[in-house]
Length: 117
Image (cartoon, rainbow, N blue to C red; front, side, top):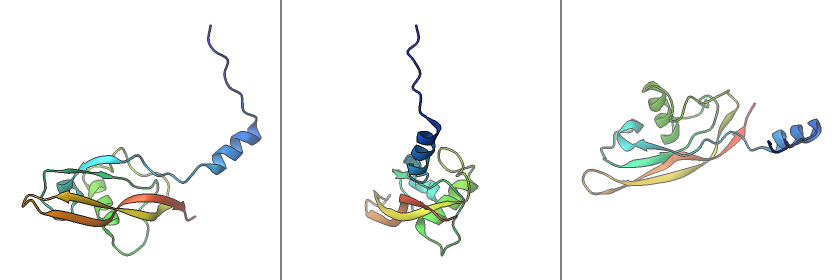
């Protein structure tokens, strides 16, 4: 016998949906060479983006990498959704390049998102 389904009144469903944070994707492993930022490395980094289109803002490591990943056939894990979410905070990513030097990409991965529309 199947367990009973949980019932939430419609008002609680609306409140839980409204309280949900903007769409911050799960970190996806991406080879450094696929970021399109000119770094040569055999390493893979974790890249996170917000659901939504590319924000109209000055170029950033995050925006440039996301544009390049989309041009390669989609963002990791699928294309971003609607156009209302953009990064409000970023995380730096560090990796070892082919010359065995540490490289730090400032603001590469989204750490938080916010709704702008």
